[in-house]
Image (tube, rainbow, N blue to C red; front, top):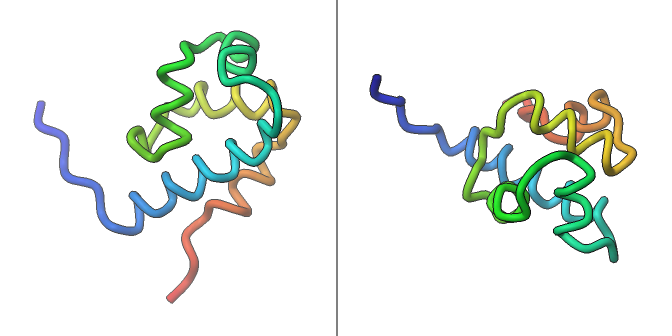
Length: 83
């Protein structure tokens, strides 16, 4: 199956999510947060840097829980901006 290319808006939302997660991580190490969420540090690195702009729902949910963020907050801060 061929995956359709992401739109610029989808890429921007992925970058926003990465910035938000990085800010929420603060001084905590990437490896500690990734381990708490049940992910590899490389997966977290890809999300934070925008190289994985559309992570799976359960990956985002696990990171939100590890960082003390609500899914509502993530959606509110990463939702598309109406034109």
